[in-house]
Amino acid sequence: MTMDLVAAVDIGGTKIAGALVDGAGTLVHRVQRPTPATEPAERVLAAVTEVASGLTAHPWWPHVTAVGIGSAGPVDARGGTVSPVNIPAWRDFPLVAGVRETTGPLPVTLVGDGAAIAAGEHWRGAAQGRANVLCMVVSTGVGGGLILDGRLRPGPTGNAGHIGHISVDLNGDLCPCGGRGCVERIASGTNIARYARDAGWRPEAPDGDATAAGVAAAARDGHPVALAAFQRAARALAAGVAATATLVEIETVVVGGGVSQSGEVLLAPLREALAEFATLPFVRGLEVVPARLGTDAGLVGAAAACRGHAETFLARGAAGT
Image (cartoon, rainbow, N blue to C red):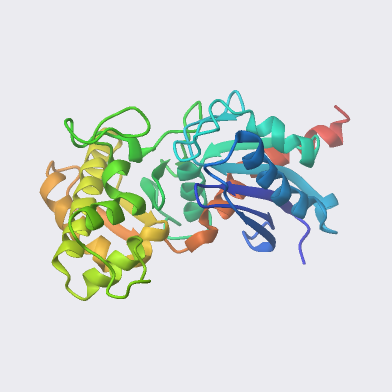
């Protein structure tokens, strides 16, 4: 058992997860709590603290060299604060300081959840060996991260690649971020289900699944409203991907998150719409592949993002600084 450990925390609108992650990207100990997303800021931090405490209580904690946090965004990596769209009580919330109350003086790296997933998929998943990649998470929200020239490029604040808040409908619905017609407002799991319900879709059973997973099941059965909901979401995603590809010349799109579990119900219309939107010679034929790491991608990626900080911390310790 290697003791080359870092701690990772993944904060989203649905769950808060933490893990000890070894040098091979294996989660050797894991803790998870639901996100009290609609509760006061202190209650959300208390859930994070519960997760972090579950890590520090593990016998291997003394071997941990750094902490990585991937959070729903926007984030401010320079200031250590977060303002997740789907956690209304956290606005410029001092997350890094809050986590350090539990984890102590270890170096902490904060990145957006999309950047974390990009780092994870590049290290251990579907983006391995690829140099220019957009990794998207399609879940409660829509996020993304960029691998360019073989390296994670989170940007100065940790938000680069945040495709969910590219506007693809200038006259569209108001998004909680303040913009209109954002990709997330159309293509997130929450909004896929909302659109389907507003258009008259209902689960067959009275107590059936009324979430995006239920819509996906209905789409696989050929329900026209469910199919339309996913086609609409796929077109919004494709428009955002095409814009991103035009700016930075990505070659591959990795799609993860809970909604990606619908498989070809989402990916097939996404590829079809990309062929329509990404038409310039240098963006044609973008490869679209499903993520490999599933729900662990954010944790693996938060670990990957902080490993350089762990090496710096150890070097300082060896030098006595």
